[in-house]
Image 1: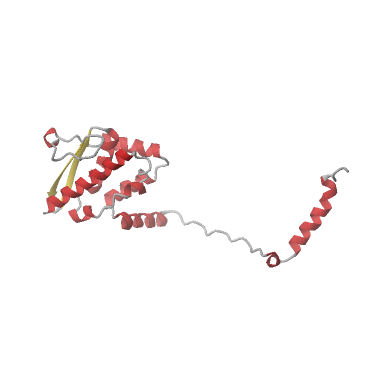
Image 2: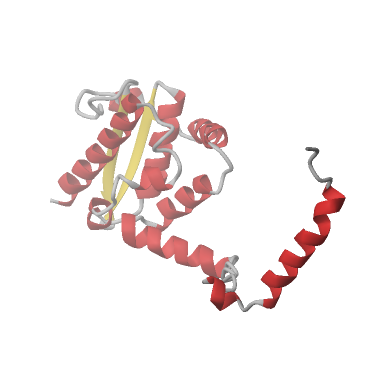
Length: 193
């Protein structure tokens, strides 16, 4: 037996549709769709995000600015390019400071960091023979310089994930980053005491 054509089924579909529309939605166990609240974008939400990053990771204002800048970039490739650019802005450390005392252990690249205390605030300088690592050095040097040892001590290393770099750093580079921050914290404590 041949199947009815679409035109033959059209009256049945129309009647079914009318019955569905005529019956109250409650009798079908359906609720009207809930529309999502509009997202609040702009300065207010950015300020809230920045405040929460300060609270969560205890970032210095300079470090927060850099982290939010990296976070705003569209992808890992752009963040890498930014780190490479930051490396070009990092002044070379004088050879006299490239000693075992200033060397950061556990880095794939050779990294040296020095610090000095002026007016109860710590100022760092650093250098690396690897460009990406040098960009990470610059991020930390700029972000931690000019702050008290106490402000430096509370910075949570997990901020690197918030910056959008955590997942894209190799385990070796991530370990090196953690070691750089640990050495800078240790130097800040030594300078304070």
